[in-house]
Amino acid sequence: MCPILKKQIDDTVCYDIHMNVEGLLPDWGVPKEVVCIPDYKRICLECKNHKE
Image (tube, rainbow, N blue to C red):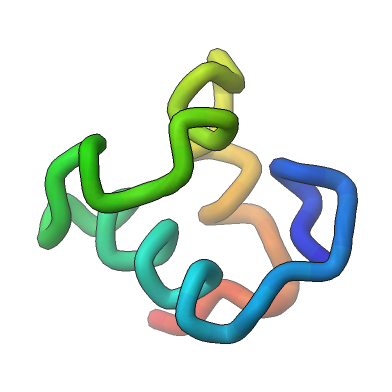
């Protein structure tokens, strides 16, 4: 369950969001619906599934 999109997402999409939040993937590499969320990076960092 992705706390940003509030729905179940594929592991690949989760990984892409993670890489974007860590600064390793540009915004165009993640779904537009993610980057439209104002605090998506903070939400991802606080997610229990976020890998360090």
